[in-house]
Image (tube, rainbow, N blue to C red; front, side, top):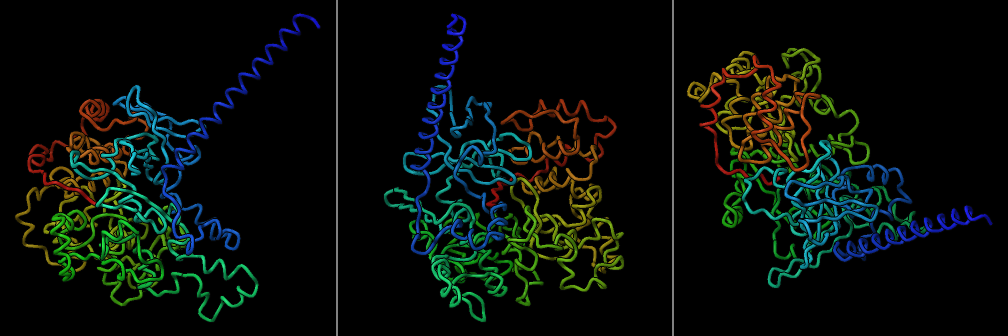
Length: 576
Protein backbone atom coordinates (compact mmCIF):
# COMPACT_ATOMS: atom_id res chain seq x y z
CA UNK A 1 0.00 0.00 0.00
CA UNK A 2 1.23 3.46 -0.84
CA UNK A 3 2.61 5.47 2.12
CA UNK A 4 0.13 8.28 1.50
CA UNK A 5 -2.82 5.88 1.75
CA UNK A 6 -1.41 4.38 4.93
CA UNK A 7 -1.18 7.84 6.50
CA UNK A 8 -4.78 8.58 5.54
CA UNK A 9 -5.99 5.33 7.13
CA UNK A 10 -4.07 6.08 10.33
CA UNK A 11 -5.58 9.57 10.42
CA UNK A 12 -9.11 8.21 9.94
CA UNK A 13 -8.56 5.61 12.65
CA UNK A 14 -7.31 8.31 15.02
CA UNK A 15 -10.31 10.49 14.31
CA UNK A 16 -12.64 7.56 14.91
CA UNK A 17 -10.92 6.92 18.19
CA UNK A 18 -11.28 10.53 19.25
CA UNK A 19 -14.96 10.49 18.28
CA UNK A 20 -15.49 7.28 20.16
CA UNK A 21 -13.82 8.62 23.29
CA UNK A 22 -15.88 11.81 23.04
CA UNK A 23 -19.05 9.77 22.69
CA UNK A 24 -18.12 7.64 25.71
CA UNK A 25 -17.33 10.78 27.68
CA UNK A 26 -20.73 12.29 26.80
CA UNK A 27 -22.49 9.08 27.75
CA UNK A 28 -20.63 8.96 31.04
CA UNK A 29 -21.54 12.57 31.80
CA UNK A 30 -25.16 11.87 30.93
CA UNK A 31 -25.26 8.80 33.18
CA UNK A 32 -23.75 10.74 36.07
CA UNK A 33 -26.25 13.57 35.63
CA UNK A 34 -29.21 11.16 35.47
CA UNK A 35 -28.00 9.42 38.63
CA UNK A 36 -27.75 12.76 40.46
CA UNK A 37 -31.23 13.71 39.24
CA UNK A 38 -32.69 10.40 40.41
CA UNK A 39 -31.14 10.83 43.87
CA UNK A 40 -32.50 14.35 44.25
CA UNK A 41 -36.05 14.19 42.92
CA UNK A 42 -39.11 13.09 44.92
CA UNK A 43 -39.87 9.42 45.23
CA UNK A 44 -43.11 7.75 44.17
CA UNK A 45 -46.01 7.48 46.60
CA UNK A 46 -49.51 6.06 46.59
CA UNK A 47 -48.91 3.28 44.08
CA UNK A 48 -51.73 1.32 45.66
CA UNK A 49 -54.13 4.12 44.58
CA UNK A 50 -52.42 6.07 41.81
CA UNK A 51 -51.33 4.68 38.44
CA UNK A 52 -49.88 7.72 36.65
CA UNK A 53 -50.85 9.45 33.43
CA UNK A 54 -49.10 6.99 31.12
CA UNK A 55 -51.59 4.33 32.18
CA UNK A 56 -54.41 6.60 30.95
CA UNK A 57 -52.98 7.08 27.48
CA UNK A 58 -53.92 3.77 25.91
CA UNK A 59 -57.66 4.11 26.54
CA UNK A 60 -57.98 7.90 26.41
CA UNK A 61 -55.53 9.03 23.71
CA UNK A 62 -57.34 12.26 22.74
CA UNK A 63 -57.78 13.41 26.35
CA UNK A 64 -54.20 12.43 27.11
CA UNK A 65 -52.85 14.40 24.13
CA UNK A 66 -54.80 17.53 25.05
CA UNK A 67 -53.51 17.30 28.62
CA UNK A 68 -49.96 16.59 27.44
CA UNK A 69 -50.04 19.77 25.35
CA UNK A 70 -51.19 21.88 28.32
CA UNK A 71 -49.26 24.08 30.70
CA UNK A 72 -50.75 22.08 33.57
CA UNK A 73 -48.50 19.19 32.63
CA UNK A 74 -45.37 21.33 32.61
CA UNK A 75 -45.90 22.83 36.05
CA UNK A 76 -43.14 20.52 37.30
CA UNK A 77 -40.95 18.30 35.14
CA UNK A 78 -37.75 16.37 35.53
CA UNK A 79 -35.02 18.48 33.97
CA UNK A 80 -33.84 17.22 30.60
CA UNK A 81 -32.34 18.95 27.54
CA UNK A 82 -35.69 18.97 25.73
CA UNK A 83 -37.47 20.30 28.84
CA UNK A 84 -35.04 23.06 29.86
CA UNK A 85 -35.91 26.20 27.91
CA UNK A 86 -33.02 28.41 29.02
CA UNK A 87 -29.83 28.76 27.06
CA UNK A 88 -26.37 28.69 28.57
CA UNK A 89 -25.47 32.01 30.16
CA UNK A 90 -22.99 33.80 32.38
CA UNK A 91 -24.79 36.10 34.80
CA UNK A 92 -23.61 39.49 36.12
CA UNK A 93 -22.47 38.03 39.44
CA UNK A 94 -20.23 35.51 37.67
CA UNK A 95 -22.52 32.52 38.13
CA UNK A 96 -23.07 30.29 35.10
CA UNK A 97 -25.99 28.29 33.78
CA UNK A 98 -24.68 25.41 31.70
CA UNK A 99 -26.66 23.27 29.29
CA UNK A 100 -25.30 20.35 27.29
CA UNK A 101 -26.56 17.12 25.77
CA UNK A 102 -25.91 15.52 29.16
CA UNK A 103 -28.16 17.88 31.10
CA UNK A 104 -28.21 21.28 32.78
CA UNK A 105 -26.15 22.46 35.73
CA UNK A 106 -25.55 25.56 37.83
CA UNK A 107 -22.12 26.93 38.72
CA UNK A 108 -22.63 29.56 41.47
CA UNK A 109 -19.11 31.03 41.20
CA UNK A 110 -15.74 30.50 39.60
CA UNK A 111 -14.17 27.26 40.77
CA UNK A 112 -17.39 25.89 42.30
CA UNK A 113 -18.50 22.33 41.62
CA UNK A 114 -21.39 22.31 39.11
CA UNK A 115 -24.74 21.55 40.73
CA UNK A 116 -27.08 19.40 38.63
CA UNK A 117 -30.39 21.05 37.74
CA UNK A 118 -32.84 18.28 38.58
CA UNK A 119 -36.33 19.76 38.09
CA UNK A 120 -38.09 22.62 36.34
CA UNK A 121 -41.28 24.51 37.11
CA UNK A 122 -43.28 26.30 34.43
CA UNK A 123 -43.08 26.62 30.66
CA UNK A 124 -45.56 29.36 29.80
CA UNK A 125 -44.41 32.69 31.26
CA UNK A 126 -41.21 31.68 33.02
CA UNK A 127 -39.24 28.62 34.03
CA UNK A 128 -37.72 28.04 37.47
CA UNK A 129 -34.81 25.62 38.00
CA UNK A 130 -34.21 23.51 41.08
CA UNK A 131 -31.08 22.02 42.61
CA UNK A 132 -30.91 19.77 45.65
CA UNK A 133 -29.35 20.50 49.03
CA UNK A 134 -27.66 17.89 51.18
CA UNK A 135 -30.78 17.81 53.38
CA UNK A 136 -32.95 16.80 50.43
CA UNK A 137 -34.55 20.20 49.84
CA UNK A 138 -35.10 21.43 46.32
CA UNK A 139 -34.19 25.11 46.11
CA UNK A 140 -34.54 27.49 43.20
CA UNK A 141 -31.61 29.00 41.38
CA UNK A 142 -31.23 32.72 42.07
CA UNK A 143 -32.26 33.42 38.46
CA UNK A 144 -35.39 32.54 36.49
CA UNK A 145 -35.81 32.22 32.73
CA UNK A 146 -38.41 34.53 31.13
CA UNK A 147 -39.86 32.61 28.18
CA UNK A 148 -41.04 35.51 26.01
CA UNK A 149 -37.98 37.65 26.76
CA UNK A 150 -35.63 34.68 26.28
CA UNK A 151 -33.34 35.78 29.10
CA UNK A 152 -32.56 35.28 32.77
CA UNK A 153 -33.65 37.72 35.47
CA UNK A 154 -33.01 37.60 39.22
CA UNK A 155 -35.52 35.35 40.93
CA UNK A 156 -36.39 38.18 43.30
CA UNK A 157 -37.65 40.19 40.29
CA UNK A 158 -40.34 37.63 39.47
CA UNK A 159 -42.40 38.13 42.64
CA UNK A 160 -43.78 41.39 43.98
CA UNK A 161 -42.06 41.61 47.34
CA UNK A 162 -39.31 43.65 49.00
CA UNK A 163 -35.83 42.76 47.84
CA UNK A 164 -34.52 41.94 51.32
CA UNK A 165 -37.46 39.98 52.72
CA UNK A 166 -35.39 36.80 53.12
CA UNK A 167 -37.62 34.62 50.97
CA UNK A 168 -36.27 31.11 50.36
CA UNK A 169 -37.79 29.39 47.33
CA UNK A 170 -38.29 25.76 48.36
CA UNK A 171 -40.22 23.38 46.12
CA UNK A 172 -40.81 20.74 48.79
CA UNK A 173 -42.77 23.00 51.10
CA UNK A 174 -44.55 25.47 48.80
CA UNK A 175 -44.73 24.48 45.14
CA UNK A 176 -45.54 20.85 45.84
CA UNK A 177 -49.00 21.83 47.06
CA UNK A 178 -50.20 22.57 43.53
CA UNK A 179 -47.46 21.53 41.13
CA UNK A 180 -47.65 17.79 41.70
CA UNK A 181 -50.24 15.05 42.19
CA UNK A 182 -50.78 14.06 45.83
CA UNK A 183 -47.50 15.61 46.89
CA UNK A 184 -46.29 14.74 50.37
CA UNK A 185 -43.52 17.09 51.57
CA UNK A 186 -42.31 14.52 54.09
CA UNK A 187 -41.18 17.42 56.25
CA UNK A 188 -40.49 16.56 59.87
CA UNK A 189 -40.12 19.91 61.63
CA UNK A 190 -38.84 18.23 64.79
CA UNK A 191 -35.82 16.60 63.14
CA UNK A 192 -35.49 18.64 59.94
CA UNK A 193 -35.56 15.45 57.89
CA UNK A 194 -37.13 15.61 54.44
CA UNK A 195 -38.45 12.65 52.45
CA UNK A 196 -40.62 14.13 49.73
CA UNK A 197 -42.83 11.92 47.57
CA UNK A 198 -45.46 12.50 44.89
CA UNK A 199 -47.83 10.35 42.87
CA UNK A 200 -46.68 12.25 39.76
CA UNK A 201 -44.91 15.50 38.96
CA UNK A 202 -46.94 18.23 37.28
CA UNK A 203 -50.70 18.57 37.29
CA UNK A 204 -51.64 15.24 35.75
CA UNK A 205 -54.81 13.21 35.12
CA UNK A 206 -55.30 12.02 38.69
CA UNK A 207 -55.08 15.55 40.10
CA UNK A 208 -58.58 16.19 38.73
CA UNK A 209 -60.00 12.71 38.16
CA UNK A 210 -58.85 11.23 41.44
CA UNK A 211 -56.78 8.10 42.09
CA UNK A 212 -57.02 5.82 39.06
CA UNK A 213 -56.06 2.38 40.33
CA UNK A 214 -59.62 1.19 40.80
CA UNK A 215 -60.60 2.49 37.37
CA UNK A 216 -57.60 0.99 35.58
CA UNK A 217 -58.08 -2.41 37.22
CA UNK A 218 -61.81 -2.43 36.50
CA UNK A 219 -61.23 -1.71 32.83
CA UNK A 220 -58.50 -4.28 32.40
CA UNK A 221 -61.04 -6.89 31.26
CA UNK A 222 -64.18 -6.74 29.06
CA UNK A 223 -66.47 -7.83 31.90
CA UNK A 224 -64.89 -5.28 34.21
CA UNK A 225 -65.62 -2.51 31.72
CA UNK A 226 -69.24 -3.63 31.45
CA UNK A 227 -69.70 -3.61 35.22
CA UNK A 228 -68.02 -0.24 35.62
CA UNK A 229 -70.61 1.67 33.62
CA UNK A 230 -73.96 2.57 35.12
CA UNK A 231 -76.70 5.07 34.44
CA UNK A 232 -74.77 7.79 36.25
CA UNK A 233 -71.48 7.14 34.50
CA UNK A 234 -68.43 5.23 35.63
CA UNK A 235 -68.23 5.13 39.44
CA UNK A 236 -64.59 4.03 39.37
CA UNK A 237 -63.28 7.46 38.31
CA UNK A 238 -64.16 11.10 38.96
CA UNK A 239 -65.65 13.22 36.19
CA UNK A 240 -65.56 16.79 37.58
CA UNK A 241 -68.33 17.97 35.26
CA UNK A 242 -70.72 15.51 36.93
CA UNK A 243 -70.04 16.76 40.45
CA UNK A 244 -72.24 19.85 40.20
CA UNK A 245 -70.94 23.39 40.54
CA UNK A 246 -69.75 23.04 44.14
CA UNK A 247 -67.99 19.74 43.48
CA UNK A 248 -66.37 21.03 40.31
CA UNK A 249 -65.12 24.12 42.12
CA UNK A 250 -63.67 21.93 44.86
CA UNK A 251 -61.61 20.06 42.27
CA UNK A 252 -60.19 23.28 40.82
CA UNK A 253 -59.95 24.86 44.27
CA UNK A 254 -57.36 22.31 45.36
CA UNK A 255 -54.90 24.67 43.67
CA UNK A 256 -56.82 27.72 42.49
CA UNK A 257 -57.85 28.98 45.93
CA UNK A 258 -56.43 30.49 49.09
CA UNK A 259 -56.97 27.79 51.68
CA UNK A 260 -55.58 26.84 55.06
CA UNK A 261 -55.09 23.13 55.91
CA UNK A 262 -56.94 22.04 59.02
CA UNK A 263 -53.73 20.36 60.20
CA UNK A 264 -50.66 22.02 58.72
CA UNK A 265 -48.11 19.85 60.56
CA UNK A 266 -49.72 16.63 59.37
CA UNK A 267 -49.96 18.00 55.84
CA UNK A 268 -46.25 18.80 55.80
CA UNK A 269 -45.42 15.23 56.80
CA UNK A 270 -47.96 13.19 54.85
CA UNK A 271 -49.47 15.44 52.21
CA UNK A 272 -53.20 15.80 51.44
CA UNK A 273 -55.68 13.50 53.13
CA UNK A 274 -58.20 13.97 50.36
CA UNK A 275 -58.47 13.62 46.60
CA UNK A 276 -61.30 14.27 44.16
CA UNK A 277 -64.20 13.90 44.70
CA UNK A 278 -63.67 14.57 48.42
CA UNK A 279 -65.08 17.98 49.42
CA UNK A 280 -62.35 20.56 49.84
CA UNK A 281 -63.66 21.67 53.24
CA UNK A 282 -62.86 18.27 54.74
CA UNK A 283 -59.14 18.97 54.56
CA UNK A 284 -58.85 22.74 54.17
CA UNK A 285 -60.76 25.92 54.87
CA UNK A 286 -61.43 28.43 52.11
CA UNK A 287 -60.20 31.84 53.24
CA UNK A 288 -62.63 34.73 52.90
CA UNK A 289 -61.76 38.24 53.95
CA UNK A 290 -63.53 39.57 57.08
CA UNK A 291 -65.07 42.24 54.83
CA UNK A 292 -66.91 39.40 53.10
CA UNK A 293 -67.51 36.75 55.74
CA UNK A 294 -67.23 36.12 59.47
CA UNK A 295 -64.58 33.44 59.98
CA UNK A 296 -63.52 33.32 63.65
CA UNK A 297 -60.77 30.76 62.95
CA UNK A 298 -58.93 33.42 60.90
CA UNK A 299 -57.77 34.95 64.20
CA UNK A 300 -55.40 32.01 64.69
CA UNK A 301 -54.04 32.41 61.16
CA UNK A 302 -53.44 36.13 61.68
CA UNK A 303 -51.76 35.45 65.02
CA UNK A 304 -49.12 33.47 63.13
CA UNK A 305 -48.96 35.82 60.13
CA UNK A 306 -50.33 39.31 60.69
CA UNK A 307 -50.02 40.14 56.98
CA UNK A 308 -51.78 37.02 55.71
CA UNK A 309 -54.79 38.96 54.40
CA UNK A 310 -53.05 42.08 53.11
CA UNK A 311 -50.65 39.91 51.13
CA UNK A 312 -53.57 38.32 49.28
CA UNK A 313 -56.66 40.55 49.29
CA UNK A 314 -57.68 44.11 48.61
CA UNK A 315 -59.12 45.75 51.71
CA UNK A 316 -62.71 45.17 50.56
CA UNK A 317 -62.13 41.43 50.42
CA UNK A 318 -61.55 40.84 46.71
CA UNK A 319 -58.59 38.61 45.96
CA UNK A 320 -55.53 40.51 44.75
CA UNK A 321 -53.31 37.70 43.49
CA UNK A 322 -53.66 35.35 40.55
CA UNK A 323 -53.99 31.59 40.68
CA UNK A 324 -56.65 31.93 43.39
CA UNK A 325 -59.70 32.35 41.19
CA UNK A 326 -62.12 30.40 43.39
CA UNK A 327 -61.81 33.05 46.11
CA UNK A 328 -62.86 35.62 43.53
CA UNK A 329 -65.66 33.53 42.09
CA UNK A 330 -67.41 32.93 45.40
CA UNK A 331 -67.67 36.69 46.00
CA UNK A 332 -69.54 37.25 42.72
CA UNK A 333 -73.28 37.78 42.66
CA UNK A 334 -73.29 35.43 39.69
CA UNK A 335 -72.31 32.58 42.00
CA UNK A 336 -75.15 33.11 44.47
CA UNK A 337 -77.47 30.76 42.59
CA UNK A 338 -75.05 27.88 43.05
CA UNK A 339 -74.78 27.08 39.34
CA UNK A 340 -71.67 29.02 38.30
CA UNK A 341 -68.54 26.86 38.24
CA UNK A 342 -65.07 26.97 36.76
CA UNK A 343 -66.31 24.74 33.94
CA UNK A 344 -68.94 27.32 33.01
CA UNK A 345 -66.17 29.05 31.05
CA UNK A 346 -63.13 26.76 31.12
CA UNK A 347 -62.38 23.36 29.65
CA UNK A 348 -59.39 21.22 30.49
CA UNK A 349 -59.41 19.17 27.29
CA UNK A 350 -61.00 21.45 24.70
CA UNK A 351 -59.87 24.84 25.95
CA UNK A 352 -57.30 27.35 24.73
CA UNK A 353 -53.78 26.53 25.78
CA UNK A 354 -53.07 29.81 27.55
CA UNK A 355 -56.25 30.17 29.61
CA UNK A 356 -58.11 26.86 29.16
CA UNK A 357 -61.14 28.83 27.90
CA UNK A 358 -63.79 26.55 26.45
CA UNK A 359 -64.70 26.98 22.77
CA UNK A 360 -66.60 30.22 22.27
CA UNK A 361 -65.84 31.50 25.75
CA UNK A 362 -63.11 33.97 24.74
CA UNK A 363 -65.66 36.73 24.17
CA UNK A 364 -69.06 37.88 25.36
CA UNK A 365 -70.56 34.40 25.01
CA UNK A 366 -69.05 33.55 28.39
CA UNK A 367 -71.52 36.04 29.89
CA UNK A 368 -74.44 35.89 27.47
CA UNK A 369 -74.88 32.18 28.13
CA UNK A 370 -76.67 33.47 31.24
CA UNK A 371 -77.31 37.17 30.57
CA UNK A 372 -79.50 37.89 27.54
CA UNK A 373 -77.43 39.35 24.72
CA UNK A 374 -80.41 41.42 23.61
CA UNK A 375 -80.30 43.30 26.90
CA UNK A 376 -76.59 43.52 27.63
CA UNK A 377 -74.54 43.07 24.45
CA UNK A 378 -75.96 46.29 23.02
CA UNK A 379 -74.69 49.83 22.51
CA UNK A 380 -77.50 51.03 24.79
CA UNK A 381 -75.95 49.06 27.65
CA UNK A 382 -72.23 49.36 26.91
CA UNK A 383 -72.24 52.91 25.49
CA UNK A 384 -69.31 51.85 23.31
CA UNK A 385 -69.13 50.92 19.62
CA UNK A 386 -69.60 47.16 19.12
CA UNK A 387 -65.98 46.59 18.11
CA UNK A 388 -64.49 48.60 21.00
CA UNK A 389 -62.76 47.08 24.02
CA UNK A 390 -65.28 48.85 26.23
CA UNK A 391 -68.09 46.89 24.60
CA UNK A 392 -66.71 43.58 25.85
CA UNK A 393 -68.35 42.18 28.98
CA UNK A 394 -65.14 41.03 30.60
CA UNK A 395 -63.38 44.33 29.93
CA UNK A 396 -65.76 46.11 32.30
CA UNK A 397 -66.91 43.37 34.67
CA UNK A 398 -63.71 41.29 35.04
CA UNK A 399 -60.90 43.86 34.73
CA UNK A 400 -57.29 42.85 35.15
CA UNK A 401 -56.81 43.87 38.79
CA UNK A 402 -55.19 40.69 40.12
CA UNK A 403 -51.44 40.26 39.97
CA UNK A 404 -49.14 37.35 39.24
CA UNK A 405 -46.44 36.01 36.95
CA UNK A 406 -45.29 39.55 36.22
CA UNK A 407 -48.64 40.54 34.77
CA UNK A 408 -52.16 41.77 35.39
CA UNK A 409 -54.81 39.05 35.38
CA UNK A 410 -58.59 39.20 35.23
CA UNK A 411 -60.43 39.44 38.50
CA UNK A 412 -62.79 36.50 38.91
CA UNK A 413 -65.13 38.52 41.08
CA UNK A 414 -67.66 39.70 38.52
CA UNK A 415 -68.67 43.26 39.41
CA UNK A 416 -69.17 46.69 37.82
CA UNK A 417 -66.87 49.74 37.54
CA UNK A 418 -67.01 51.89 40.66
CA UNK A 419 -64.99 55.04 41.29
CA UNK A 420 -65.77 54.80 45.00
CA UNK A 421 -63.85 51.51 45.15
CA UNK A 422 -60.83 53.11 43.48
CA UNK A 423 -60.88 55.94 46.02
CA UNK A 424 -61.52 53.92 49.17
CA UNK A 425 -59.84 50.60 48.41
CA UNK A 426 -57.22 51.47 45.81
CA UNK A 427 -58.26 48.75 43.42
CA UNK A 428 -58.20 50.30 39.93
CA UNK A 429 -61.56 50.59 38.18
CA UNK A 430 -62.05 49.10 34.74
CA UNK A 431 -62.64 52.46 33.05
CA UNK A 432 -59.34 53.94 34.24
CA UNK A 433 -57.39 50.86 33.15
CA UNK A 434 -58.68 51.35 29.62
CA UNK A 435 -58.77 55.16 29.48
CA UNK A 436 -55.26 55.64 30.80
CA UNK A 437 -55.34 59.35 30.06
CA UNK A 438 -58.49 60.15 32.08
CA UNK A 439 -59.05 61.35 35.65
CA UNK A 440 -61.34 59.65 38.15
CA UNK A 441 -63.66 62.65 37.96
CA UNK A 442 -64.14 62.08 34.23
CA UNK A 443 -65.02 58.43 34.87
CA UNK A 444 -67.40 59.34 37.70
CA UNK A 445 -69.29 61.79 35.49
CA UNK A 446 -69.87 59.22 32.76
CA UNK A 447 -70.93 56.52 35.22
CA UNK A 448 -73.45 58.94 36.67
CA UNK A 449 -74.74 59.94 33.24
CA UNK A 450 -75.01 56.39 31.92
CA UNK A 451 -75.91 54.31 34.97
CA UNK A 452 -77.10 56.81 37.57
CA UNK A 453 -74.21 56.24 39.97
CA UNK A 454 -73.73 59.16 42.31
CA UNK A 455 -70.38 60.92 42.15
CA UNK A 456 -68.57 60.17 45.45
CA UNK A 457 -68.16 63.13 47.79
CA UNK A 458 -64.61 61.95 48.58
CA UNK A 459 -63.60 62.65 44.99
CA UNK A 460 -63.33 66.36 45.77
CA UNK A 461 -60.57 65.74 48.32
CA UNK A 462 -58.67 63.09 46.36
CA UNK A 463 -54.98 63.92 45.90
CA UNK A 464 -53.86 64.65 42.34
CA UNK A 465 -57.49 64.65 41.17
CA UNK A 466 -56.48 66.58 38.06
CA UNK A 467 -54.09 63.81 36.95
CA UNK A 468 -55.16 60.65 35.07
CA UNK A 469 -55.90 57.93 37.61
CA UNK A 470 -53.50 55.45 36.00
CA UNK A 471 -50.66 57.96 36.28
CA UNK A 472 -51.40 58.49 39.98
CA UNK A 473 -51.29 54.74 40.62
CA UNK A 474 -48.11 54.46 38.55
CA UNK A 475 -46.20 57.10 40.50
CA UNK A 476 -47.90 57.48 43.89
CA UNK A 477 -49.52 54.09 44.45
CA UNK A 478 -48.30 51.14 46.48
CA UNK A 479 -46.04 48.59 44.78
CA UNK A 480 -49.00 46.52 43.61
CA UNK A 481 -50.77 49.51 42.09
CA UNK A 482 -47.55 50.66 40.44
CA UNK A 483 -47.06 47.23 38.87
CA UNK A 484 -50.66 47.04 37.62
CA UNK A 485 -50.48 50.52 36.09
CA UNK A 486 -47.09 49.79 34.51
CA UNK A 487 -48.38 46.58 32.92
CA UNK A 488 -51.49 48.27 31.51
CA UNK A 489 -49.45 51.16 30.11
CA UNK A 490 -47.63 48.73 27.85
CA UNK A 491 -50.83 48.34 25.80
CA UNK A 492 -52.02 50.70 23.11
CA UNK A 493 -48.78 51.49 21.33
CA UNK A 494 -48.42 55.09 22.58
CA UNK A 495 -44.64 55.61 22.96
CA UNK A 496 -45.32 58.73 25.00
CA UNK A 497 -46.10 56.51 27.97
CA UNK A 498 -42.52 55.22 27.93
CA UNK A 499 -41.30 58.47 29.46
CA UNK A 500 -43.64 57.93 32.40
CA UNK A 501 -42.56 54.31 32.79
CA UNK A 502 -38.92 55.36 33.01
CA UNK A 503 -39.82 56.93 36.37
CA UNK A 504 -40.09 53.38 37.75
CA UNK A 505 -36.59 52.34 36.71
CA UNK A 506 -35.31 53.18 40.19
CA UNK A 507 -38.28 51.64 42.02
CA UNK A 508 -37.26 49.74 45.19
CA UNK A 509 -39.15 46.64 43.99
CA UNK A 510 -37.29 44.61 41.33
CA UNK A 511 -40.58 43.28 39.94
CA UNK A 512 -41.93 46.81 39.42
CA UNK A 513 -38.73 47.80 37.60
CA UNK A 514 -38.93 44.70 35.43
CA UNK A 515 -42.60 45.20 34.52
CA UNK A 516 -41.92 48.84 33.61
CA UNK A 517 -39.01 47.72 31.45
CA UNK A 518 -41.13 45.14 29.63
CA UNK A 519 -43.87 47.70 28.97
CA UNK A 520 -41.32 50.15 27.58
CA UNK A 521 -40.06 47.38 25.31
CA UNK A 522 -43.60 46.75 24.07
CA UNK A 523 -44.10 50.45 23.36
CA UNK A 524 -40.78 51.03 21.59
CA UNK A 525 -40.61 47.79 19.64
CA UNK A 526 -37.56 47.66 17.38
CA UNK A 527 -36.07 50.76 19.01
CA UNK A 528 -35.67 48.98 22.34
CA UNK A 529 -32.03 48.16 23.25
CA UNK A 530 -31.17 44.54 23.93
CA UNK A 531 -31.12 43.79 27.68
CA UNK A 532 -28.42 41.32 28.81
CA UNK A 533 -29.21 38.32 31.00
CA UNK A 534 -29.69 39.20 34.64
CA UNK A 535 -29.98 42.93 34.03
CA UNK A 536 -33.02 44.98 34.91
CA UNK A 537 -34.04 48.62 34.56
CA UNK A 538 -31.48 51.07 35.90
CA UNK A 539 -30.44 54.71 35.63
CA UNK A 540 -28.03 54.10 32.77
CA UNK A 541 -30.65 52.35 30.67
CA UNK A 542 -33.19 55.07 31.48
CA UNK A 543 -30.75 57.70 30.21
CA UNK A 544 -30.21 55.79 26.96
CA UNK A 545 -33.95 55.39 26.47
CA UNK A 546 -34.70 59.05 27.13
CA UNK A 547 -32.26 59.90 24.36
CA UNK A 548 -34.39 58.09 21.79
CA UNK A 549 -37.78 59.33 23.04
CA UNK A 550 -39.28 62.37 21.33
CA UNK A 551 -38.66 65.36 23.60
CA UNK A 552 -42.15 66.73 23.05
CA UNK A 553 -43.67 63.59 24.58
CA UNK A 554 -42.04 64.06 28.00
CA UNK A 555 -45.02 64.24 30.40
CA UNK A 556 -43.82 67.22 32.44
CA UNK A 557 -47.40 68.37 33.01
CA UNK A 558 -48.07 65.61 35.54
CA UNK A 559 -46.15 67.04 38.52
CA UNK A 560 -44.03 63.92 38.64
CA UNK A 561 -41.80 64.97 41.59
CA UNK A 562 -44.84 65.63 43.79
CA UNK A 563 -46.40 62.26 43.02
CA UNK A 564 -43.13 60.41 43.57
CA UNK A 565 -42.77 62.17 46.91
CA UNK A 566 -46.27 61.03 47.87
CA UNK A 567 -45.62 57.39 46.90
CA UNK A 568 -47.12 54.72 49.18
CA UNK A 569 -43.97 52.96 50.41
CA UNK A 570 -45.54 50.43 52.76
CA UNK A 571 -44.19 46.91 52.32
CA UNK A 572 -46.05 44.79 49.78
CA UNK A 573 -45.43 41.04 49.51
CA UNK A 574 -48.09 39.59 47.27
CA UNK A 575 -48.42 35.84 47.86
CA UNK A 576 -49.26 34.72 44.34
